[in-house]
Length: 613
Image 1: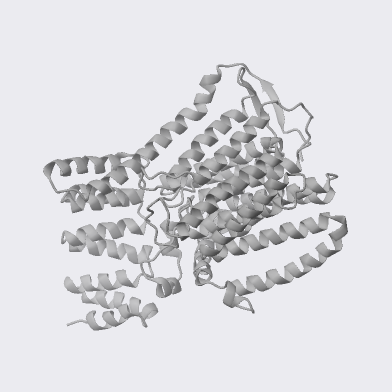
Image 2: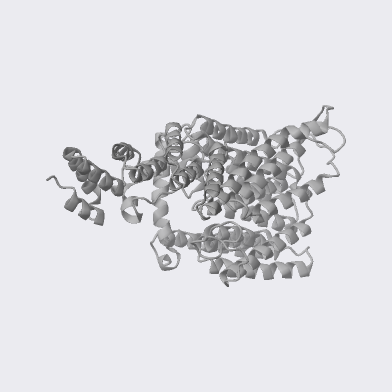
């Protein structure tokens, strides 16, 4: 820890801490059906605006004067967070797909700005969380968990008031996926479980927490997601073991418990890896598929160690780095946009500085928490309060080994990390004030106005995308066609419309017989992003329908390089070579297909059709 001087805390810090809880709840619960993406973009907008306000608040001492505060949490932590954000920004800026790098991939929104916002949430939490009344915090977590669990019950009983377009298990809460839903509830469940041991709280609140915990367990079970169950059991076991250790009468029992827990954990890991006596309970096919994701991520990192392939751009390069076994087992045209492991995702997309910085960030908080538990002179009751937060944060880290940093989960990881650091260092001052008078409103505008403008463009892209989907189903009149074309052109001209939205817009224009406009969009995308396979696949569809065979062949040849294990593309290319009479190239591509996919149905078709006359 860096040297600090003790100062008196500002009296409005408690209200600032309460605002933090409201922001975390909003990011968790909010969704909007007024846009094409009802979950990720709305949450990201809330996060961006909130982080801008929190950032301004961090440097404002009070409402009347502008007193710039330089927050010194820990010099090592400051450097680590600076490196983490800086290299994500650098990786995004120098990458081929800058928009994805800055804002994030469409279905995830984990760009550099998202993590800058999360870093601000962490710093703000580290600064103010220790001011929160713990009984109110228990009520906040209990009520939030109650709302989420109640909604989950509505979903699995078929009474969801929202008509989601959902191919998964119905339990998706407000996060869009059963795995995310179960992981979120598991993290909250660890907190709820810890509340049962806090004797200072009112009995009625503890009783309510116990009821909500039961509801949470039921919803996790009905989500059919083993991920949430494992995280809840592991996190709850760690809480129970530590409570036994900090209680003098049960300390020996605590050591016995942790010995048994270590053995069970080994069996659990073996079971998830399809070995040992628990494999029939814990193993899921998704574990095997994650192995492909992880190996592809590691290969991305080893071949691009400094800056990775580009912040949050795993999906742009997965087809190139995936193993042939993935294509053979799960489909030649199936892809992934994330490593499904937070740590490998950072290494593969941001490079070694981002990955190591994140690991060091975790290590410092982890150490800070352990030092508090082992050396603090706090009462047993205070330590039990801390244990709940500490292992809820550890639960977030555990689920990150097999999951994606969905914004609804990430906000809790960074918030809980800040809470752990705040309580572990509550007696140390984290501010140094330099007075500087200025116009307060103008200062706040520096933080908020650019953020609001950015978010306005993001929201406009979502609304326009939803509207084009609605208009596409209307009667094919001249008036509707003109309106539709103008709407699609608005989408393509919006700087926050990513490649996926641009491709959809091009396809819609082509369907509306605007062939030249559609081709122009895809040509522009490929010129800007020549390494993204999906852009070529979209152009192939349009050029095939337009009978532009030579252009189709050219794109299919490029895809042999970008998507080398796609037998479907090889078969289609071989058939096109045959159509134009290029039999030598047809034989080459056929042999390439048979070399790795000889036992597939596509190989059978290739043997029968890709034959010289």
